[in-house]
Image (cartoon, rainbow, N blue to C red; front, side):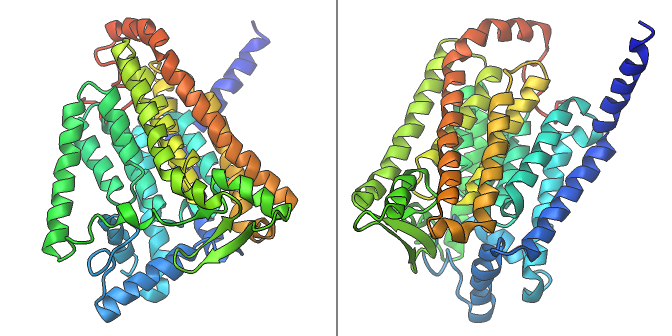
Length: 438
C-alpha cells in the first residue's frame, strides 16, 4: 500500500493537469493557431476555396453588385453568404486571415460549451479527442464553409436535450449554411421525446430565412442548392470513385481523371461512371431512409434516447459521406459532431462507449490530410501509394457506418440499463448537455 501511494498520487496529479480547463483551453487555442498558420503557409493551397472562390464571390457582390444566391442560383444555402461577408470586415487583402478568426471564435465558443466553460472536467476526453481530430484533419478543418457549420452544430447537439427549441433553431441555421446538419435534425426528431420543439425551432428559422431571401429578391433561387449539384460527375475522392481511379491507373480504355471547369473540381470518367453518378444521389437518399427507419424501429422497441441519439446521428452523417458522389476532404469534419456527443454521453454514464468510431475517425482524418493538401497532386497522377491511402480511407467510412448501424440495432438491448439509470437521475440526458437548467 505504501509503495502504491506515490504512484496513485502521481496519477491523480496527471489527471488533474490534463483535465484542467486552462490546459484544455491553451491546447485548443494552440491547435487552432497552428491550423491557421499551416493553412496560410502550406503548399497545396489548403485555403483555396476561401481565397479563390469565397473571396471572388464577395468581390463580385461589393464591386459589381452581383450576389450569388440572390441574383443567381448557388451551390450553397443562402446563409452561407453571411460568414463570407463577415470575412470582408478587414478588407479583401486580409480576407483569409479574417475568415480564420471567424472560424477560431466559433470553435472557441463550441469548445467552451463542451467543457462547460471550465466546470465539466468529466468531458476532458471529448475535448482532447476534438483537439487530436483537428490536428489529424489539418488545415482543411478551418478552411471551408463546413468549418462554420461544425461548431454551430456541436453547440446545438450539446444543448438540444435541455433546450430543444434552441437546439433545433441552431441546427437549422447550420443547415441553411451547408445542408448536412439536416441529418442531425432528423436524428433529433426521431430519437428525442421533445421532437415537436426541435421541429418548431427548425421551422421558425427556416421561415425567417425564406422570408428574408424573398425580401432581398432571391426567392427564385433560394432553393437552387438542392438541384445545383445533381448533374455533376464523380469527384475523384468520393468512395464510389475509388473503382474508376484504379481503372484509370490500370489504363482501362476510357478511364481518366479530368478537371471540370463548371464544378471547379477533379472528376473521374470510365466505363459505367455516368450511370454511377446518376444513381448515387438516390442511393444516398435510400441509405438515409434505411438508417431513419432503423432508428424509428429502435424507438418503438424501447431504445432510450441516450443510447440512440449519438449512434443515429453518426450513421446518418456517415451515410451522407459514404454514398456521396462528392468526396471533399472537409466532409470528414462532420464526424466531430456525433462523436463528441457520443463521448460526452458515455462520460456521463448514460451512453455506450464511442471509443471505436472515435479512433476510426481520427485515422480517417489523418489519411485525409495526407491526401489533401499535401499529396493531392500524387493522387491525381494515380500514384499507387496515394491510391492505396484513399482506398483505405474510403473503406473506413463503411466500417464506421457499419458500427453505427450495429449500435442502432442493438440499442434496444441497452434500453433496460438506460431505464435503470433514468430512475436514478432526474434527467437521463441532462449530463449530455452543458446547459442543464441549473
